[in-house]
Image (cartoon, rainbow over all chains, first blue to last red):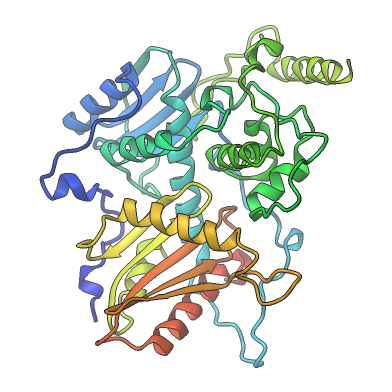
Length: 286
Length: 130
């Protein structure tokens, strides 16, 4: 029995390099205000909300990130699809009954929040908004997970090291995924996330839109789009931003308490969304 | 309530278990880990595991039928240990894999596979089955 080596629930996930006293490698993204602010909060073990303008928020407890939202990534509170929407899990053929779980909802929720935090943080590093920190009591008494900012920034640096294959992360919500008309290769093998993206790519939706509609992480969708671009099934996005000069704005993400108050202007964001899609669609016709 | 760490510490109870990691294959993220990290750290482990799984999923040679089998489990046999990579089918919309490393001298491959598959089934059960 080696269970004594297992990490107890609720501990901060520390990166092993720092635990071993080794030097943390230099981070790939340039040191921006958000990273500096996050480092200060981690050192001071402070509790509150770090807001990056309208781009997103990070909730921290004792210097550890417990919740994150960004305007690029799907909200972690989005529930799972209804069970009837999914194929049944493969049953045992020997007739043995399926074991009854204690409560899978616990780890499902934990995993969803964890993936959403890393997903939001990756894109928040592209934000040029000035970060502002507000001391506040923890937004949730028992958070699903606690991630140290050092571990979070390390993982974001690793993700940034991956080749972008014509799809820079700054275009994740700006350039639509446009499938090619003719395929030049005779045989292409795709993974399930790549198939989901190519089946749903309509020349209008961006990787961020697809992630929201498919219930995937934005980074996962971006990775799939990059692989599809490398396989020459999707057009590279490098020259697309000129086609979409209007940067789409979702309303600033609210904390899960929703106590920030609505701050939408006279133009509802959904109308802007429709206009941009309409324009992209019209340009597709010409 | 079962937490991720609860699931992993139960897998660490498998005879000969050296380490266990839960990996998100869409992003290469180490969701959680338990056990020792003396060979590679868990972030490198997750990134490397993702490469292996992606390579096998993308290779038509790694299929038993012409229509293309689904990959359930990948087993790599070292001289000193077994690496078990098992897909976790969940209501969480992510492609998750469990990576269990078993010591060859102290562990038993069949037993480890059995315990790992049982855990995968428990984790995959829909939330309403409570």
